[in-house]
Length: 242
View 1 (cartoon, rainbow, N blue to C red):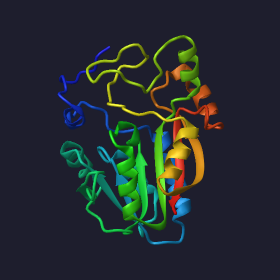
View 2 (view 1 turned 30 degrees about the horizontal axis):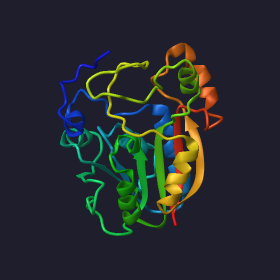
View 3 (view 1 turned 120 degrees about the vertical axis):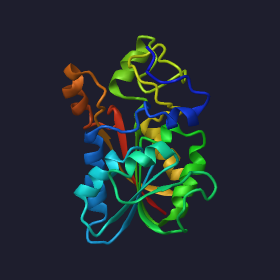
View 4 (view 1 turned 135 degrees about the vertical axis):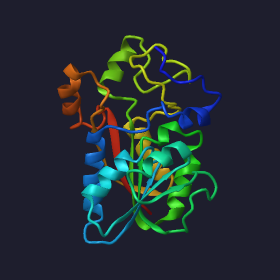
């Protein structure tokens, strides 16, 4: 089924379209913020929410973190930033190539990178840029869909395209779901650990979160699967810059 999007010429058109979903589910945001709050306990920190979208998750984190932490929403979509500015006090435009983030070296204490890496053409350059702006020992909170989620394993056995994967920018073909969101890369837990480690980070913990798009009758099972990150819908990774 197609989404109500205009036919995009490229990924930039897709992400600048207001009809493209840019916010993730609340359960993931809450779990990620709890990890962040524990990591930053007792400090006064600068936190960058890179790929903040419409600012929904950034605003949630800001409400749950102590006031001493400064949270800045970062995105390259001008439309997303306009919406984010209505929810959070600090938003800036930045890109994840070269020195595209408007921050100095080692200037941030933590980076939140939620549901972004799966959209990137060059995730290696993105992690290089994130590592540049993080101080040594700084925290990376990354989330991304799990290619090996419990239902994707069953779908693949049945010869069905996995959830989260996309073969077109115009429509969904061969898998459950209705929204085209521009996923280019998907990770299993093992692949994500290896990739982040190779980029110069020490993985502290990998945990799971539920997916808001799971049909309601299956949501209890999806929450149960979070106990085993290898089966969970969403991967939540906490790492530190080496």
